[in-house]
Amino acid sequence: MNADRIEHTPIAIIGAGLGGIGLAIKLREAGFDDLVVLERADDLGGTWRANTYPGCACDVPSHLYSYSFAPNPDWSRTYGRQREILEYIRAVATEHDVVRHIRFGTELLDARWDEKRSLWRIETSRGTLTTDFLLSATGLFAEAKYPPLPGIESFAGTAFHSLHWDHEHDLTGERVAVIGTGASAVQFVPEIQPKVARLLLLQRSAPWIVPRMDRRTSELERRLLRRIPLAQRVIRGGFYAAIETFGLISLVDQRFRHPYEALGRWQLSRQVRDPDLRAKLTPDYVIGCKRAIFSDTYLPALDQPNVEVLTEAIAEIRPRSILLRDGSEHAVDTIIFGTGFTSIPSAYERYAGSDGRTLAQLYRTRPQSYLGVTVAGFPNFFCTLGPFGAAGNQSAIYMIESQIAYIVDALRNARAAGARRIEVRPAAQAAFVAEMARRSSSTVWLTGGCQSYYQTPDGLNAGLYPNWSFEYRHRTSRFDTAAYQVSR
Image (tube, rainbow, N blue to C red; front, side):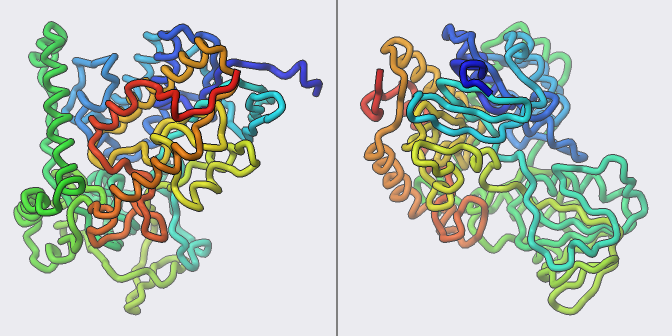
């Protein structure tokens, strides 16, 4: 194809989840109307479109897990459920007129920096285009992770991941094995437990479970929030402060763990009667080393006659059973994987920088970025929730909004300066990565006695920001031009 006929857009955003929609809204408010959002699915919403398993809900209170610029006084529960969150995202996108910028069913296949022309060449499932600025808003929980289990291909029953829930398959009266005890499993296990004949929960390590205290909101309080917007901001601030205190364990002193762990043990003691089961469900690591999970229904579901918690490792999957390393064999009809998500989004495999290396290759070598937003060697490239851009103790939307503000300010500066190329200086990134390593060395994520997706295989911080989220907000409040090479 003649290069002159290739479509060009000044700004291309990859992904129409919370990050991509927020970027499009704020860029338009700043006067950047010539942009496209490339979305591989046929609908917007990201993880809230993709995850439809029974009980799917947010583990951050609704008034905090929403855009600060688009408060919703009508949340039906303290913690939003999947369908309501998806409807909220759709409503915000429609209200702010960004749906017209989205190209659905358009998957990113390859994106490469063209050094000669100082632009990105993008190959998609619907053709080629070029862009001056490439903004990645691909989510962290978009692709299923499966454990490498021997014999899994021989299983003759039904098997699926929670991300790809088989709604056509009836679990009623079946023998079901659930592999994994992450946040998704904690939500769907109580939903399926009453339906199945037998539920086997294969647990590698017990999660910390703390009270969720979810409830339905009343029409009266929703009416009050509509009439008094300040009240909703106060509620949002209260939830923010409460969640931020979890940082005391990792960022100040691990002795702050004691009240949180006491709360978890109290929850366990009052909801699980069987002492042997209670012992299996007692974590053996510091709370916060892995993601603590809010639930009031998970532990009671496990303390039922049709449930068995198995802690032995899996030796082999057979056509109609699971063999454990202790020699015991358990007949099953269906296997459900609650084993989480890939740590590196597939889009990272498709972004190739100025030297030809992909973002995934760099990330596998060592998690690296500047502020979780830019990467040396990737000119005119910005992302949300990049390495060291996610918080372990705060709403993802809070961090995303900080990053959106930084990115918009960067593009505003580029426009004012007539810049054709912006790239973070390698020295600035190296200093930031070294700072992240220093601050991470004593965090509970690395020293709390567990293995989790918070860590790389060689024991480094996999990408969490090791400081307070409000400090990050201040740090990203404006584009720091001195950290960048800017070419006109």
